[in-house]
Length: 382
Image (cartoon, rainbow, N blue to C red):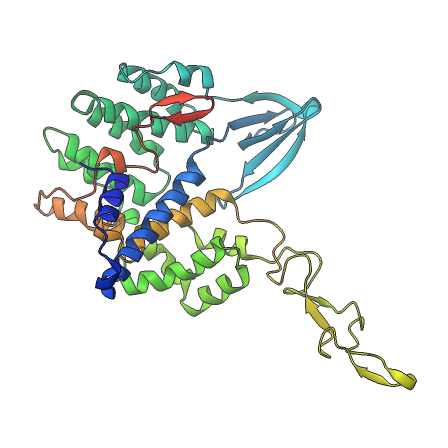
């Protein structure tokens, strides 16, 4: 089975000459756009963030997030909020009882491809610490690598172990489908998920999905005002659950909220006329302010009119990029769209259609590439 990158490279080598033009070029443009999104996703996910769980002396609930910096007097953590977004929090060391980093870079570096059991064993240890977000992500990656290195012996076992670590319902359905394929007995019980996860009042066609992706794309591009307007136009709040389980409307709305303290909805009083719309002219006359066109306000110089002060959380950007790659027009020219796999295939199998979906492989099971199985200098490499 060819990887995504091999398929994209092969298609680019067969690109038609310019004189064939027209629809052919549009098709290749779509494939190229899909490939670009995949590259963006890899860039977003390549560097492993160090997850931490901080227990405070005067607080029972631990703080979970990613380590930003650790100084002599304080520790800065990107705390994971209930919405899934992150917010930086400075914690004085005098208030910290314990700080746990479950993932050991030294132990990751000791793993070798000729010993798949080592990956599996460390994944088991990290799965027990899944309250640590870094431990959860690393356990998923290690299980996938172990399954990829030795599918006959470890594939089914590792994918089953990944199920409790699933980050959303769609991901769990995809992994259940993979576990079914790797099971020599093809036990259909593994495909059963809760009714809340499988219910869908309606299915989206590609055109509807394309419209619902627009506000999410605008948010990713930093256009929060446009994102909110598009969300209202296409009724994103009601329809987002039909599109994905990975993004909740509440976190989308929170990321779009105005936070720039220097303006009102992207406008600030004109510094020339101080909001009066007029300035002094010759002979004591009053003339329209040329700086604001007699409007009394100008585009905010701090946020550029988007009335956003903080960037969109990186974790949310990553999920939006994944969603765009999944629904992008033309993505099915090199791989079956993921939405088709986990919205219909498991149901088809339960109804007796034992067909293997094109594109569902151990290489495409997560955002990680299991061929990158060596950990060196803080990064995963081939």
